[in-house]
Image (cartoon, rainbow, N blue to C red):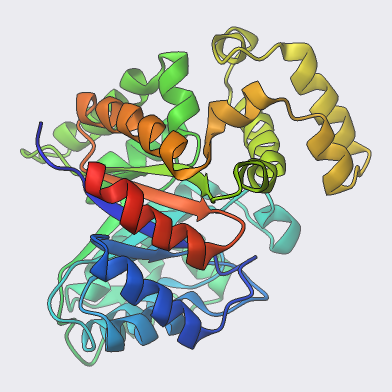
Length: 353
């Protein structure tokens, strides 16, 4: 079996960890066999591109965003940041995930025409990073949303210094078709483990691959899988840390179009998901919501527990990823204490992979 890359995602939204501490965690990860560091893109928290710049200046490693939200940053702003960060890197890949963001995005910003925004953002970013001029008359959705002068020509006044690859982070069929046609790879999100269990993963991947082939791309584009992990010496703490997030992901699957039959394949009854829906709609506290999330729901989404348990489950997920042509497992969430979780991942899990 060919080796699979290991990535780690830093959650800037709910990790209250300073940039110097993030650098320290990144150095631990790099020395322990992690091959790529990723950061989330959120409002009201540490800026993703600032954090990437700090990591790039201190750690020789591939970096990425998971995701850059298409409504938070214009392509010109994003291209400026990406090319600037490239000057701090050692030539390793800078990967930019693109998508509309998580379900909270519409609560934060107006988010119209998500598919048009995704396509235009990918096209404009590719052109800008290639040193080409962009006129937003060619991208009417972006011109309207970001109030660009449609007749003004924009281009970077300096060159990007490292390979940059755009990854499609939208995992609905229309988004995946756009990704295959206009982007350079697929970043399958946090439902990877559950979607694989429903049996629908091959058909979704095929949408992406077919679109890439129709666009004249001869090589199979790289695919990365996000795996939600919560590992700690304290097994119960690891599982409780993941419980609410797992429940919200189960709800998200229903909103993504997964059927009751799909949910049943996870060992979860639709009535259980109905109760989560009601609790969410009625504003239940995280504690109240978490009480409705069964262990079966938790295990459908997360790998959560002590290092030995997580190691065995990760070996299973690695096999699934290999079968479907994924080249990297990108671990997110990590656990109640990110520093401990990264250390355990590096010392007790990665060596087995």
